[in-house]
Amino acid sequence: MIFGFSILKHISDDLGLRIIDTIKGTSRDTPVNNAIRNFSINHFTNSYSIWLTVNAGVLVGGKETVDIEFINEPDFAVLDEKFKECLVEIIGKDYAEKIPPLREWGLWAMRYGMDIKLEHFDETMRVFARTDMPVQHLNPQNAIDIVNGVPAYMFRETGKKDGKLEIYPKSELIKLGYIDYRGETEHLVDKNNNIVRLAMNHNRRHMGYAKRFLTKFEMDLWRLDSFLNAIAVTNTFRKAYLDTIGNGDFYKYENALKIIEKEVSNFQNRKILIELLNNINEKGSVAKARESAADKTKFKIELKLMREAGINGALLESDAKIERIQNPFDEICQKCQIYSP
Image (cartoon, rainbow, N blue to C red):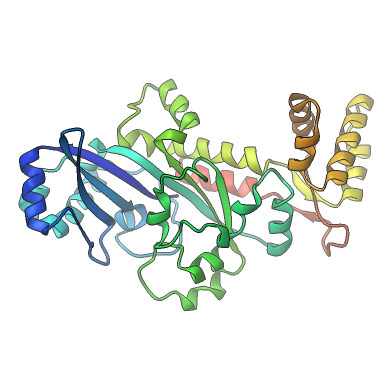
């Protein structure tokens, strides 16, 4: 579920200079199957620091993959040893032995998410665009920062997508080379043409919810192991989905109206939801209806009431060939549970 992370660690001047001399510079290209995708040494604030970009899938599974494998919370006793092996391949055993274990490194940025198979792919992507999901987070062509694969995009300083959920067709990401996979990908495109990749990019400036969650459990807000805690990851991810897509299934306007009239017994609530549904239908999306609402808090409360009734609010097109699309939120929660039982 965690795609990768960017970490840093201060080291002594002597060790920094020795490593620079060993690799003949301040950075070097890493071996193909190494989990460390980028290795560099910087000197600022009067000290040396090592900055790394790590592919979590390769670190955990020891192999290249375009799939997201769900595992329980990482066992740092195992990851520390694998991490050291990766360092040995880059800077040699003598210097790798002097580098602190993975769990002691500071986190700078993290990217995580999951793959979901959609039964009605095109219709679901269109209805996602009628939620609060920014359209640019649904089109991989707009992810212009992803030039050299996920790691290059993951840690850009622009902050345009930090902390925001993105949902991209996985086959398009493969074709564009935006998935961090060092191998032939042509044969993978058709295999993944009904799968979407949900992803989030967080750096330290945009981890407000995660930090509040970690503070509650008195975790270290600097070290990597806190932010890789399975509970913190899954709660942050689910919140991002609910903030942008929301729960409740997707219906045509007429069908949603019938459900409200039939299932909502309270007359006042029924009236409120019908007015809200009409407003969303008229404006064309939940986002536009929210934007036009005079009272944003009232809109949020009413939308929550509708979703508790099982209706998302974002509507299928009137000429859609299907009457209902089940929200994949339940599947997302199930996968989160696999990762964090």
